[in-house]
Image (tube, rainbow, N blue to C red):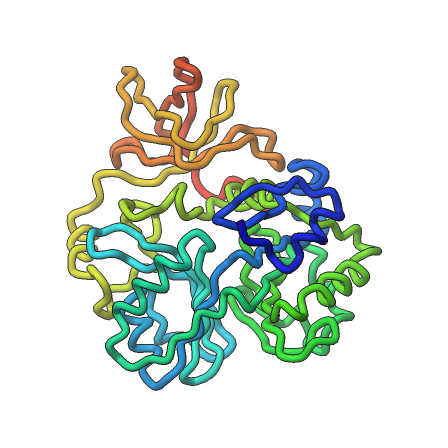
Length: 360
């Protein structure tokens, strides 16, 4: 089990630590609902240093990215980031990721912790273009400072005007007394804020200064459990739950990051799938009757036939409702369609709703 540089800090704060993607990670501090509300209404900090980072450099860096990812990275300018995925040859998804254009011929790829080795091996196997690839995952830390008060609370720590960094844009600047930190407006909570990329040797200083600066704003450390409820309220996909090696980006509602203006891994088959239509879709639902949907619960139709599976589910802290995501046949995917979630052998009524669940 690996530790992040800050694992000892989380333990000293009384965090409940759990194994996650091979790392010893804080799942909660004072409780999921409290931490969730802190991020929705104020400002909270996640240590997500388990995430993977690859640096791709060279004149063919963009060409390699275009070849292995579904989105069109040619539109990126320096200081812009893009959500994308790595398709496999079978129509599924190797991983979802964020691509940052750092310099003209340099890109940072941020991948899921559980897929670092898999992604690295896949991209390396496709690199017949002489692109210089560095896996810097072990050397870098990542803090997500999230919530509507994040800009105001963190402004004293940097010379950059944080309010001018638009969603999916970033700056390389000074932060908390450290130079050349990536300050990125790419959150996973739907409540605004920043992600801070820095070297492992710098992260404890940054963590301490962040909490000093945010003290008067009620800043708190937040665990992975609240990260999950926050992202689910927005309908953001979680790799391993809502998307995986056997789910196509089109089935998962990720057609918007699947651009057929270029050729990429399996693009011909995915284009055909788009033209012919998919047989199943990832839908959002809320329960009408009492119960809480969980990952892998069965979804049934009105006649009791099992037609799908729940991929993510929870009791939404913001809405006070039971919500979830799952795959169902396309015929049952339109808003207001009636479905049933099988909870302890009982079929609980639910309806398909539009994302996001949580609206500001």
